[in-house]
Each structure stands twice: as structure tokens, then as C-alpha cells.
Amino acid sequence: MSDAIDGVIERALDEIKFGPDGLVPAIAQQHDTGEVLMLAWMNREAVRLTLAEGRACYWSRGRRTLWRKGETSGQIQLLRELRLDCDGDALLLLVEQHGVACHTGRRSCFFRAWRNGGWAVIAEPEIDPAQLYPGQADPGDTDR
Amino acid sequence: MSDAIDGVIERALDEIKFGPDGLVPAIAQQHDTGEVLMLAWMNREAVRLTLAEGRACYWSRGRRTLWRKGETSGQIQLLRELRLDCDGDALLLLVEQHGVACHTGRRSCFFRAWRNGGWAVIAEPEIDPAQLYPGQADPGDTDR
Image 1 (cartoon, rainbow over the protein chains, first blue to last red):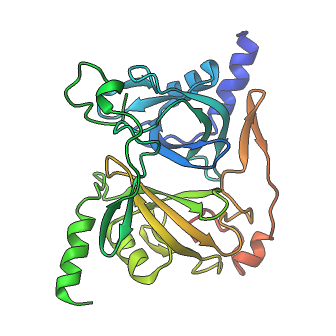
Image 2 (image 1 turned 90 degrees about the vertical axis):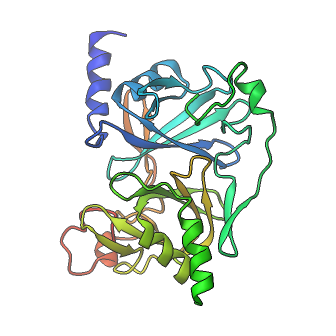
């Protein structure tokens, strides 16, 4: 990109109010069905990369590194639209999710629902996590 | 509620992993259309009240107080379902939004979309904010 375009983008990124830790929460929503897939975190560089590459890149708080969603599992998220909220401190990504969003093999990470004073599992895995993360005994978290 | 029921609920609340500040991000989604309305924050007491009262109660980070959504504006959110994500550190509320969710008078807080290197406003107010917050020159943030 040219320096002029870079400057325009950087000024627009200035409107995002990152927290004291340099992060904002980012919601990923399937663009056509409206399903909320997951909530992850982004720093400025993750937003930049997501826009430049057209696929979701987050900041892994657990591993303290940039994390291109699907880099291990292949379950990438193509960006259809990036939205910013009124306060500038939350992002909404409309994405085209390839496969499943959750490290447990479920389509959405929000697969527990409050029922009668406790959490009930309301969705089953669509794929074995061992297939998503070959060679890993325990994928540990969603940051893959 | 009986002590036994309280105990069951408290153990279920233990599964929510609140951050160092005692908060988790909470997404509010219109239950039938799938529209993501806003992202706010909850502490343990806010979750408890939301479940007990059947309407969304958040923690206002700006005002450092519990905030029953709509207490000033009347734009309440009736809880249809509460969901928890795989890591236990994010909540999804399926709600029935009365009126608008955003303090700007728009239905959703996510009314800015990335277009050609900048943020474009993609939704107009449905109601004048002055009607939502009478007597306030500037509602300031979404925490009303």
C-alpha cells in the first residue's frame, strides 16, 4: 500500500479505543445466519492484519502472540465486514466461517445455555478436536 | 429462593471465569433476528441479577456501578437465554430488546462499518437521544 493509504488507515484505526492492555473484544458472527461464533481479542496489529489479509487475526491472551484464526486447525474466518461500536471499544466481525469456530469441534463457542440453575450443553461437536489439532493431546484453549 | 437453590446457582456461577477486574464481556443479541446489539460487561452480581430478574443488568465500567439496562432510557432487554462460551470467559445474552440498544438512538451499537479505509455510518437513529435521556445534555456512554 502507498504511504498515503497507510496514513488514512492508521487514522481510522485511531478511532478504536484499545484498553490498557492494548486489546479490544472482537465478536465473530457468521455473516449470513447471524450465529455468534466466538469472542476473541484484538490489538491494533491484529486489526491491521485482518483488514490487509481479509481473514480474522486475533491476539491470543494465553500465548501472548498474534493468532491467525485457523492457522493450526484450518478453520479460518474470511472477513465480510468489520464493524465498530458507538464507544469505539468493541469490534464485530461478520465472517464466513470455514468449518467450526470452537476448539472443541463445535460450530460456536457458545454451546452452554443456562437451564434450571446450571449450564446445559446445547450443541455437539461436528468434528473431533484431535482432527483439528493433530499431535496435540489437549488444544487447551480456543486460540488456534 | 431456598438456600439449596442458591447453592446450585452459585456453583454454576463459579464456572464463569471473571477477569482480574471481576468482569467478563457480555454480548447482547436480539433473540429472533440474530442482530448483535451491543457488547457490555458483567460482574458476578450483574449475572445473578440478570438471571433473577429476567432482564439484562450490566456493570458500568464508566460509572463503576451496576446498571440495569434501560433504567434511564426505558429501553430494557428481556432475557431469553444466557449462554457461556467454551473457555467460560464470555457471555452471550439472547434478548428481546425493547426499542433501541444504543445510546445514540440506533437499534445496534455496531453502526459503523469499515469502507475504503475508514468508518462509514450504516444506520441512522430511530429515536432522538434527548428523548431517551431527558434532562441530560450528553448521555456520554451506552451505560444507561
